[in-house]
View: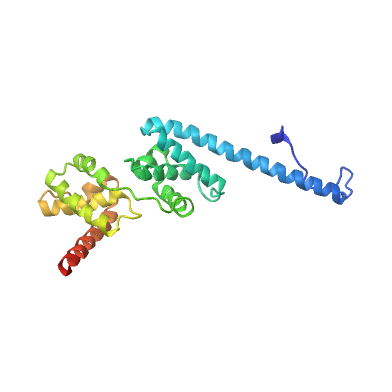
Length: 239
């Protein structure tokens, strides 16, 4: 059994005498093979554990088979490219799942995955950045419009506020300021600003608690939304 084989790390025989060059070269080749078997075994074990975890998440998060396969494929790439060092394996799997959901436009928030897998959003975000840099840098960002109707309804926003927020989000998409941003944060900022203009005001605290984003994030997204609107207004006037 290769997993039970232990190759000595000493270049001496049982009597403590130095080994011949031929024997040392033979042992060196065996060490490399032994290390390769252990590495391969560990990689497969990690992948098997990931498959088990995704089997549970498929049911709890209502994931499609396509999303599950995409997640596992991305996770396997992190193992094959030896990107797991210094990163939590569960964090990487969570990030792979989040990336696959974004790629396939499946409405699953970072907070949902964080809560379900018991991993902090900070850790998932750290792993997600690694994946974007090393594996899938050209991933198309998720369109916030996919989430707007459901979130606005849950928040109790009026139809008028929802239409206003949709208009604001369209301007953000045109400006490209949505790239690299959580779509929920963009929606939070848009609904806050929309509420101000329509009289259907929701406080930042109220939106923060309902959507799971910080008030600081809401303020940042509001600023970016206003910049997008002002920029496109100026371009229209100049045009």
